[in-house]
Image 1 (cartoon, one colour):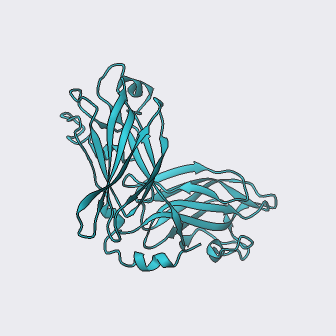
Image 2 (cartoon, one colour):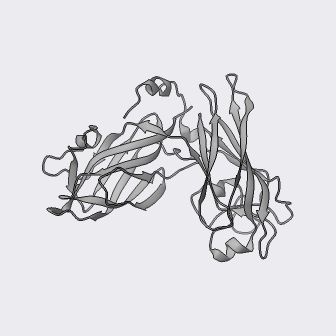
Image 3 (spheres, one colour):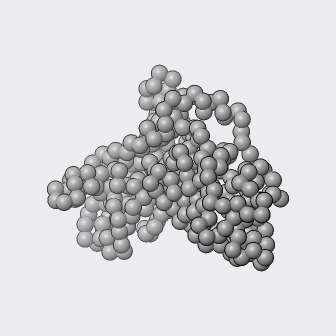
Length: 313
């Protein structure tokens, strides 16, 4: 699975993906009470919390407002957005929601100057929840640098009570490639089914351990990780049903199917794009489909990873 030709490139990186933490907005509603001046600023659209939002002021014309996010060297594949203030159904309807946007890329060239690198448009339904829109592929960056993405509002759905729009979440989906995991820690091992079996590219061998307290800690040094793939070990042992992925202070919980095929679980994004997690990542097994012979044990044949960028590029 691992692509060795990428290793030389990743070794050139001299700073972490954590550097790509920026988000800025054309304008935002000023908060003068208890929440802090920047409560409605751009960072509230990439914090993983639907009860917060990037919100423009009531005096804004809405059209032409924009949010800018930093991106590593990569390719933009999809645009995800919660188009209103999704704290609850009432707030979603009360404020205006985003309908149409223009997506523009600026890339750093070889002399570290920003230059235009392509644009497209996207349209969203007037629906609560994360919507993910396929885009034409938009490359970002040069050999050693990333760039920026600007999402500009072209039109809105009117709010019932307030004219200004709010956006609870923005998530840029970057194109993915395979990365090789390193297992750092594991909760237990059973019956000779050891941790090395998780990463041996052989689905006939497998790791097995106790269901209670089951966890795996892993990393892929040099890569920005977006998804973890879990392949069950067969029906004798329990198969993973629900997992919690913890990365850089963010948590994602997901149920997966009872299948012999690889099941993919998103690693929580940290800075507004998929693959913005770095360092150690923990997978906690919350529930399993019980095994026919070993109901107190869980088995995983392979642990796969997908990444979207190399750290620092």
